[in-house]
Length: 515
Image (cartoon, rainbow, N blue to C red; front, top):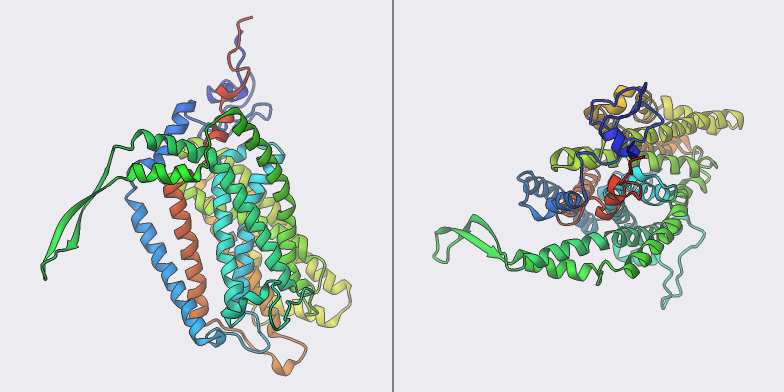
């Protein structure tokens, strides 16, 4: 009898007598709970894993990529123009008014910080819990975290009004002896988000070092090969003429230099791998409490105030659950198109991996829905008339449409994942992920619009965003997508070494003996 690894048995359809057959989606949806589903499909070996993942960078640029990048860069340019217009003119170009002194800037900040939570969760917490299905998506999610936090960090700098005074957010002594107010949660955000970004950047970059060294060595073998692109139309020295020209550049030589610097001298030695493994676990342990602390601190922006509807202890866990909820949805929003556009990625990002992410979205979405309901219960149980009125205004007041969009997208929509068909239909999952992202943005919008009805009914107003508000947010989406497309083109989207570790060939008991 030959001993087979569970991954091999599943891939071959040998799920054992009496067990249900594997699902026909891609072979990873195994019905038998006693059989481990395969994490990598397509009978991959170590060489094919390296060739496929490196090929996404080394092969010719896909035809869709320049169009997608130019579109996102154009949108990012619009956002940059809006920010410059804001700096020149002032925050009066936004829709801010009394009593709504916080508008779309704080909404977008909290939304982007929440999206940045899934990467650290997938990489750090699932790593500590030895969840191997994370290996095909952790690099993807980590990159999304970095770019989302960059977009989030943009808004505190511009929402202070006079952006040249943003340095006062930091505890820097100056000639006027003006120090920041350490009792303000806005200052706590600077420390929390800054720490989170720094640790996440180290975690993401350190995990890529072995793969960058692989790209360096492969580029070194092709240093003498030049890359020709064109023909393109360029102006001719003579006036009124345009010439069709072809350009040749030493792309592989440049790549070997760049990757060589980024690899930090990695040589695949035992000492390097030993230090790498220890540092990776250490950073995972540091990142884990950050997942809980960062968005808890962000929730203090609201919870430590005396505004009805904000001053509640449910905000920290409620914000953390919502952050993980929106982060996983954004990972799916980006992962599903990439999975279809890049050849071979479906072998690494299996249907079972996507189903696991859908289950987490259902769990966190249920936690968010529980928090929504408990807010009404707490307002009623506290017998505070103003608090009760605030929540009734949220659901049935001027912004009722925003509240019910939020409730539908965040509470009702994820519940469809209780049904197997919904967790396995990729197009349907993509649509749900977009709805969740929309709903989480409206959650932050609903929280901020609570300011429209303050303690003085005579000062109540209706907040409406301006064109600058809308285009600044759209521009942040362009910045995010531009950074993400650059990552997909020039850096490994999947962790090569970690994907190899989950192959059947990496197991010590691969070569069974006849008994």
